[in-house]
Amino acid sequence: MKSNENNFIRRLQRQKEDALEFIVDKYLPLIKGITYNVLSPLGNDGIMEECINDVILSIWSHSGKFHGDATDFQKWVCAISKYKSIDYYRKARKKEEFASTHLDLNKEKSVEDELIEAENKKEIIELIDQLEPVDRDIFVMKFFLGFKTDEISKRLGLSRAAVDNRIYRGKKKLHTKAANLNLGGSTV
Image (tube, rainbow, N blue to C red; front, side):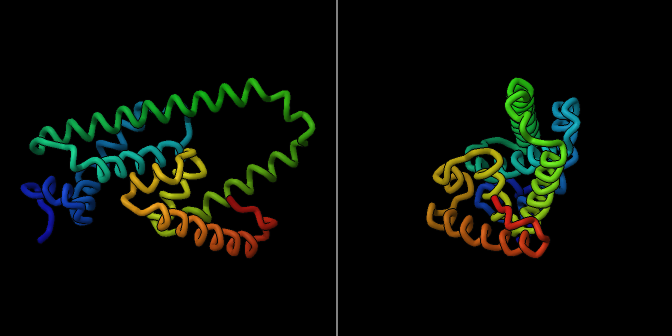
């Protein structure tokens, strides 16, 4: 059975992947629009993409809590998108404030060192993007959003051991790929 306008909510609540694909196809423009409206002042496409992924993950993870029809579902998606975007906006602003208040502490770093470090981080993010979607979500939650392993396992419906194993294997993959790109063995 394939998800359609009449059954996608029930199928999503049963964690059927075709329902998630249906929702992404139907609601992604709406999610992107809301996210863009809130996060565009930051001027960071990476944060917007991360937020959109988190919205979709939240819809998937919390689908069992939704009760209503397709119209209510659209409102629910809008609310999740809005509040996730606001959370991301606040986190980004806090990081900017923290960075600006502690700017003087990094005087011993040269501009060249900072550029190399920024380039390495960019390459590491590109490497993480090459991981499987579940592994990528785990790495983003663990190393960029600061989630604890228990919280990640609950959100993704995996055991703690499965999350730990995926982190271990993912780090090995990243280390190998980083070595091949001459990043000096920098890993997450």
